[in-house]
Amino acid sequence: MFKYDVAIVGGGLAGLTAANFLVKEGKKVVVLEKSNRLGGRAMTNDKNGILMNLGTHGLYLSGETMTILTELGLSIPGGNASKSVQIHGILNKSVQVIPTDFSSIMSSSLLSWKSKFVFGKLMLNLMKLNVDSIPEVSLTEWADAEISDPMVRHIFYSICRLTTYTNAPTLQLAKPVLKQVQRSLKGGVLYVDGGWGTIVEKLRQQAIAAGVEIFPSKNVVKIEHYGDYQSILCSDGTVFNVTDCIVAAPPKEAVKMIKDAEHTSLGLWNKQAIPITASCIDLGLKKLPTSRHQFAIGLDQSLFFVYGTLEM
Image 1 (tube, rainbow, N blue to C red):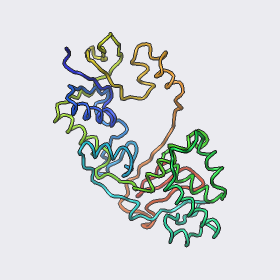
Image 2: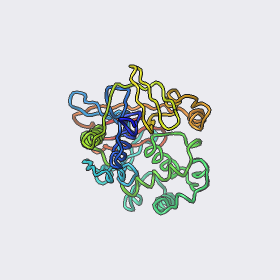
Image 3: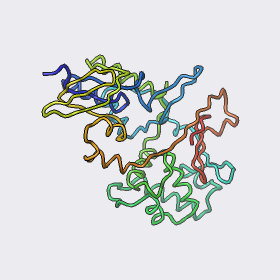
Image 4: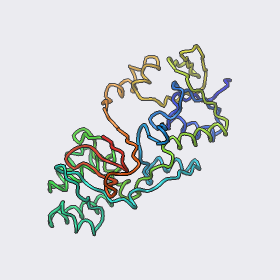
């Protein structure tokens, strides 16, 4: 009946991934992106030859994202930093080695002998922990019940901040945080060659080759439901009538587009969503001031350094 079966609003990683899966199912798909660039927070900016990621920097090798990209047949080149880089911790403005295996745990000056065994046991338990069995408690509640040693708890929280990019243990549920920690321990992190923009471009090329039409600079202002189809109005006056519509945008933006959305579960989600303020400062350096300090995380403050990049 219509030119497209599905319209996807949002040309970020989620939107482009959805487009690739739908076109594989034989659907005629169009992607509408309000920006003149695709990728959203997965964009990579080229600053004088130095590639800087707008959002997340590391791709978890054992996470769902890598599983999905592999299922789509995409090869993502990069390096696994955890296999070759020693992790340091910043405590009281001094830098010390963070224990990550049996040898470094035993030689660590951060931990007392008793704390070394507590930390080693914690790491082993995290590796084999059945995350699904954890009750709906906050990360703070879980840590208070499971970790009695103050320094071990310091290190644990720093790992949680590192793997989630969030410092809100009283608000975060323990289950998803611990699942993310498990991903980092089991598979490590891939730093993508060429930045995350490489993934965006691969998804774009594959989608276009399969027949997906992508329109940048198409700002969707209204989505209305008419029985068996959706009508999508763009700010330039363009209208797309499709059988189905996927909104791959934050709830705050989605509520504005969809008529009467404030009275639905989407409206409730938007009200309950907690805004997060984050800052990431990338520094392009020809060499590190101290070559052995390639990866350092704050134990008493929420920051970490990676390969000469300061992230807060």
